[in-house]
View 1 (cartoon, helix red, strand yellow):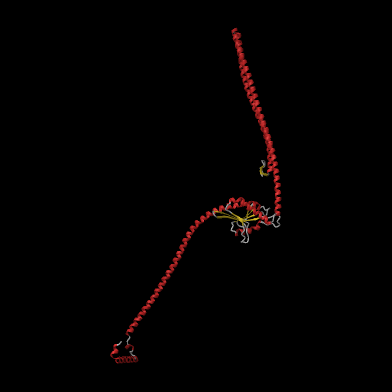
View 2 (cartoon, rainbow, N blue to C red):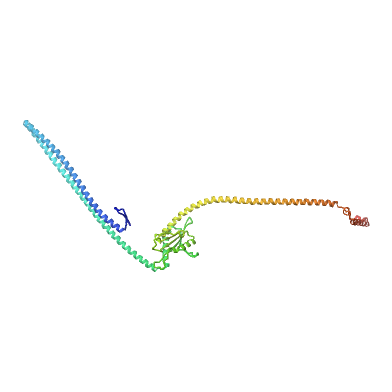
Length: 452
């Protein structure tokens, strides 16, 4: 489409290629012919003005020379008359001299007239040559004009022929496109639903492996065959940089036959696609769909539906490659930002960890100090208690010792006499026992006394 601006009202309107070519050919032919006629008229006027100027200059020069010659002739005629008058007054000798002078002057006049005639013929010849040159120049200009006209006509004919060829080629292409549409419609009518979906999957797989694989030699792009989570997507794309995954995309391909009785909508598959993305730990979710072919929203190409499900997009099949490139470029930029953030986070973590370790050390040291201090106090208390207990034992032992000493003193002071004092029975018993022992000793004799 081309935009044209009206020179009167200034409004801008659009015309297609055929109308534009037609307008250009019309404007070009009319303006070109008018320009040629104007240029021809200007050339004729310039040539005529130049010729008239040359003639005027030549006539003026000729007139100036004639005037000069006439002046010389008049001067000579005056001199002749003066000489004739002198001849009349002088003698024959003078008349002869005058006659000779007149003859010489006549000869000079004849020479001047011959010179004037030659100058005139030269001027006429120069004018004729200039006229011939001007005529030749005009003829050349006419030839150029004729050539330009022929070229213009040839260009117009070629433009018309090219326009006709373009129209024929357009008609042929239109017919081929219609035939191809009919063929595809017929082909799609004969396809099963599974075959239609597999055709779109094959298109995307061939596009990536045939066109994009050299750009992503280390990328993973395979069908999702893991249905352990209850469902699976169609394709998973993952790419790595320095051995680290920086992007992952879950693809779902949805194609639908025009003759299918039940028409699905794109939003019918959003929930499943988001679940597949989460179950396979993919960052993005992309629905490649030909559903809702009359939707102005989805026919724009790439539709962001992140307001319903995070990082989800719906695209037409022709935007499969641009979508991957767009997400990859964005992910690479984010990867660089993440690296910088990781570096800054690690630096911040180092400081934070140092402070945390210092605080942990302080807390552990304080806790251990408190525990040791408590145990130390408890030990001192136990020692104090033990000391008090030992002091009690000591006091008890000292008390026992005193009692034992007193008892010992009492035992040492104890005698038979004291024990039997006031006790007649015991006194009598001890006296009988003593008498019996003495009697026994006497009966034993001296030998028995020596034995132990």
